[in-house]
Length: 390
Ligand SMILES: *Cc1c(COP(=O)(O)O)cnc(C)c1O
Image (cartoon, rainbow, N blue to C red; front, top):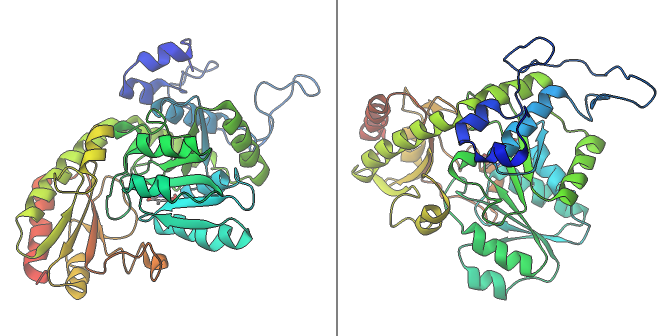
């Protein structure tokens, strides 16, 4: 981490930390770019006397650099990198004991729902879906076996926003851990640990990587005891990322701030188009004053992000046609990279939640607004709506 101690590091700005924290020039060669350390094992100076690395599942220099970099951006004392967002989530759930319940916000990434409902629940970890916008109901209907509250904000795909601080206060009074999936906001727009969350999780596949070329996951925590247990599971279960993948995420994160500013700016241009378009019914974007998450988003986010969802008046078939009719927006799952993507959540990313409390409307379209020229994005989506939206 260079010569600065932790406190001094945190006084520096976001992009300075993104570009330098964890990434001091290599002491032996002076290389400015963090090397991709492929070695699986590390020579010891004497029996049991290593220089910080022994075996690459337990610790790897490239992964270590990434862990220091993103932890710094989340204002966290500890960071742990994983092979995917779901590998990171799976490791977090291992903090629970059988019988402890997970309360899941009722709008969440389909894979998170599948992991909790179809992998962990059959093993004896109960779960329930809750409306986290209704804080009175959350406090009053609190089941006494809850061990963890799991939320995304903004959510995927409805972009609902939840008040992290208020939910954490309720959960902590009842001894539950609060996990926030910060994939949509990124640490540039929102830092959940500062708002009272205990664990932050990322799909690094999305904005952190930012270029649709790497699958990865990340966990950030402040608490030493939580870190120790997560680090144990990271090594014991071994869902670690390859050094090359760590390098790609590390490189992507350096430009996170400039990319996020552009994502937000372009998203606003798209929202302006959608709000005025006759084929469009509801526009879901947290900046809109009538959006249910607007108040929470305005309180805890720097800006409103690059994800936009909307429904079309003509229903499901029209939504499917529009999603297949763009040329700059690519029809594809995933999100958070430089190129704009369009998808139909009901038939694509959220198909696994069909028939569950997390089912999404079938006339919904989700956009990941990229960093191309806004005018081209507006023209492309406008044409698709004119042609296929009615
Ligand atoms: C993609 C995603 C995940 C899962 O991450 P992977 O890297 O695909 O395993 C989790 N949460 C959210 C919000 C996501 O968008």
